[in-house]
Image (tube, rainbow, N blue to C red; front, side, top):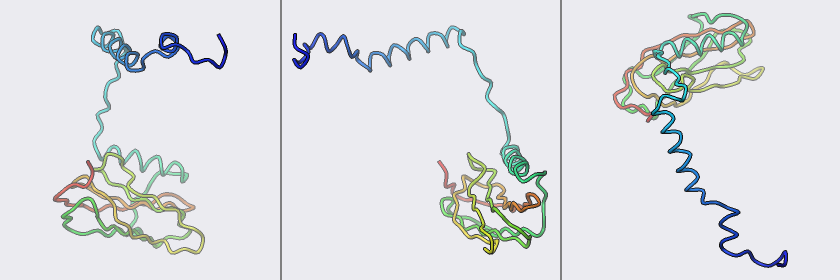
Length: 164
């Protein structure tokens, strides 16, 4: 048989098994092992939304070299009543020196950090953006400076959530 000659259908089938059959077999094996209790299970984390935001603030604070601190010098502006959580105008500004980053966090979202902005030298520490909010809860504005992480929070009352 020549190297350039086409393979027969049987030879081709032996060389490349049906991927659907392999996936079905692997899924069936996994289900059998899981159903028999032979696979290790992982307990689901039971964290509250505030715990997730607190953990995110702690992680951001550790990168800044200290624990996060609430500060009246960080200002967060958003509407009192939010009709559509898909497009929520949020503004964060700071009266702090050496601002390097600005974050928007939301405790009701699946991922706590909704937005992150790097602020270059000479730029005003102020951003305005539209974010998605999954529902009512608290929105946080955090600012990382050369000396640490500072934050503030405000309540958000959302009538229709924007995250699915």
